[in-house]
Length: 300
Image 1 (cartoon, rainbow, N blue to C red):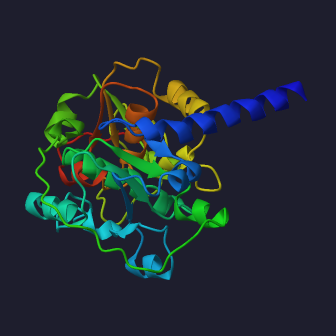
Image 2 (cartoon, rainbow, N blue to C red):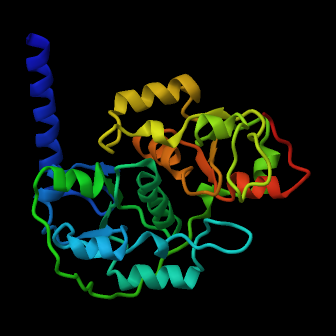
């Protein structure tokens, strides 16, 4: 009983802290994961920009009041050689300006979260926004489902943002290409975020030419970062999983990858933004690109 009471008090303190801090939030300071309570208390924050990355038809049926429709397809460009690439630089900068996002905006990403297919979209979009130089970016924990589950208000009014001109600088340090990955074999810690069957080489996507994984990679599926309700697992659980599978040295070089770059941002985001690992990169071309080159080694 005493332990339960302490837990309640502790959660209450955390909630109070989360709700109180935004009143003094700095220009480059927002929690990497925000709760529905935080968002509800800050819907009128002058620098808040909520982007709803669900399908447009889902947005029209009901969205968090004030959220702007910015469907996932805006952020994931597909070409013949790769399935998930960044849009061209000029289109990306124009899109951010059209959404009214500036360098000091506090951006909260809202998505579906009831299955992993949708859960990984928010970290992918967050990574894209990091790529163009934004820093004040967060993900709504539990997404649209958590908001609805708690019977919070919804709107069907389409929000038209006040357009601006975004002038940022591309941050290319978070992403690595195939040649760099090949040069780090046996040196960096590679994290394969696909499901175990794909990691072990028992299954593969149609667009991936071979089964298996990059030599030396450990397996930490993106789906393991979430609860059954689509919220992120507690920080202690995430830290424990990473410590057991990846290691506890927060200065080591870590490179995450998946099949096509869609899922690998999940653990890259968690390790770097939530757990404090200092040298995390993601291989955007991932196993799709790796297997297109017959000279690249593969383990099964």
